[in-house]
Length: 307
Image (cartoon, rainbow, N blue to C red):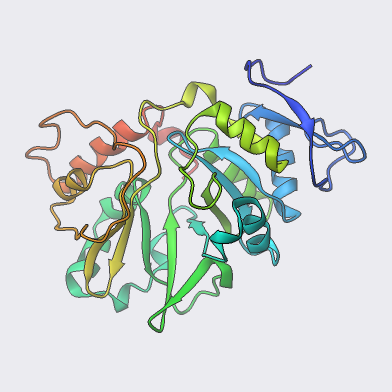
């Protein structure tokens, strides 16, 4: 019997069999079958961590988009991601899931101009804004970030960081990865290179089946809005939007009271989350970003966060 009652549950052959415990029902070595499971299944979470620690890839649901999670320190993970997403992806760096309180530790704050450096010193930047955008910035020089998690541009090392701890289910899996010794949790969107990111569960199931991936999801956490996080670049030349996303550019500017250059931003595939007119008017950045966070993660409760 399946361990989740969702109608899209399937068991299907996997193309790669990873080490698993003898009593595993998620991946059975020698039979090569796998499950699509709910995050509520603690056994499935443990097996997903086993797959990731062995260098495998697990499909996961982040609420507004499906993604892929890996051990970013594993030597072969860049090739594994490229084999799934296609050669066109190349070895672009993966985004790093920041441990609680460590988002800013991965960034070379000292290299940023004063107006951007001031922004990173605000408590709401890491607590709220960092949960709604992926932050792209020069990498901290004193931290040995794995090479396929950084990129070299104009003589600088860049890192992309996201805070994953606001969405039920995905945060449980990531916390389990950290607890299981995966220090560099990393992720990317679930899609073939150049294609639209996947926001529909049935499409995610089909993707997992094509690529032989375990998939974990939380049916009750499906979100009204769809799409990836915006990418906010903390640049030596100032703030700019590298990619549009689930939070509209205008709402980011209103909430943060900052001007953000979006002239070269990659367009979003989906419309941004609807923010009620006037909701952010008159609010300071701390309250405004908290309101956006509440809208983006409606099931999130601060006292339940693994942070």
